[in-house]
Amino acid sequence: MERIGEITAMDGNVAEVTFCREKDCGECHACDGGQKRTVLHLPLNGMTASVGDLACVELPTGTVVKASLLAYALPIAGLLGGMGLGALLAPGNQAVTALCGFVGLALTAGIVFMGEKRRRHSAAWQPVLIRVLPGAVYGKKTDSAGAEE
Image (tube, rainbow, N blue to C red; front, side, top):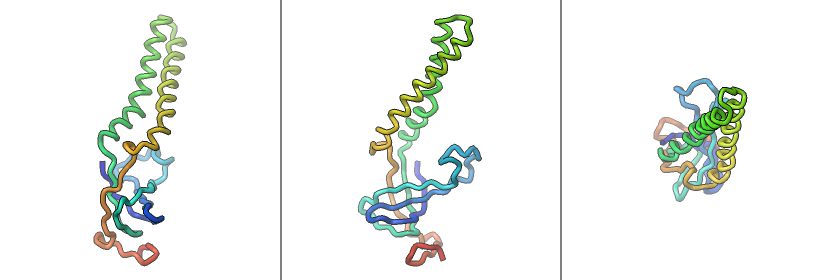
């Protein structure tokens, strides 16, 4: 999955890339607490860039699918598995079934949460800057400080 953002600041060999939320995105505000932009700090990896340039950033599709499964499918599986176990342990007792479902959901959500720290620092789960496109090519004129004219 590729996205194009604007380089809004530079700090040595690291570019700050800002992305605006896609127009077709819903209004659920699930991403970044409802902010309309996302900021990443990415190493340039030998590329040259300046403020106002556009940056093409990629996260492999397989990684996006894995992240979606971890975030959505695993907790739902925990909920349903817990409910199934509760129904087996106490047939007809909806309170036990619901409680076991909640415990299964909490356990799988905890597993996802605890693994997040490891994934956050793993190179395989990080977006990568794949190319820099000069902002002037796309009709953006910037001054030396990077502000649009």
